[in-house]
Length: 193
Image 1 (cartoon, rainbow, N blue to C red):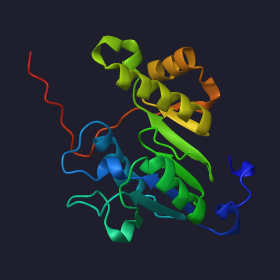
Image 2: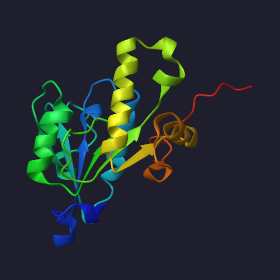
Image 3: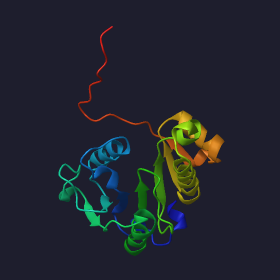
Image 4: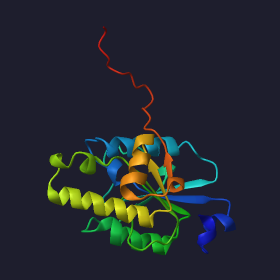
């Protein structure tokens, strides 16, 4: 990925700047992608050597945001329509991180650095009756856009990777399976049998 971008900061210094869309973790009630993003940020904060986490939000961090100021460079870009596509894209072009990661397929329209994103599911294709027409169309557009714009995608299961390849035309080598984890101290609530 690095070879395609001339600005590569990593080549000229000892630090790698990883830009992350942290909005999913910046909510009071975290579900789904919010939990994923929260736990991912916590895990990434433990990588202290030669890495700077630059977190982009659309508002100030809420109480309980997973990182404190000493663990990140924070950038707050006020919320607006098409935030990730336009405002975030402009900030990434200006600040030139080494890589940008989106935990939920929301990528800038204009790419200025290598990008990666996680795809969590194609339920809108597998069970279309559960989604409105606009939700199905939005899901398809977001997925196709990410397939064309991201340098790499992460799928949460092998079956998700196979669906991206079969249903969406993803190149198998451009998708890596990274299973969801569990937060430290997680205990499954499984009834005794």
